[in-house]
Image (tube, rainbow, N blue to C red; front, side, top):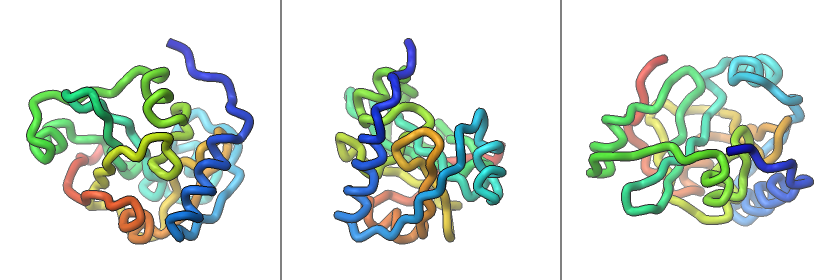
Length: 162
């Protein structure tokens, strides 16, 4: 499947509108397009661990959830399955993730998602972080505690070191 064409900034506007509605203070940074998480972190002048990946995960019941994972870690499927009490989880294709969130891969964030899926955040996420801002080439800085509270996130050990 192929990625969707640029949405003309609508994803970014949706992100900003939802952040404002949540009372979430965000600082958007232009970082340019990056071909890797490490490149994005370098463009922002931060360590990879401060870049939080927003992963869309398909639940066996056909719904989705967001898993927030620090850039220096990877999702632990066994830990997440145990937390959710399921035997199987999967990552959807890019077009399915777009349909579920309204965001292209590389821009995905639970803030402003077209559907407010449940959020599960790794317990190692702390301090000021960066995450997708709904548009390629932009990232948002936010206090992780404020973000997780505003999303009603479940915080748990759901990752492993790379």
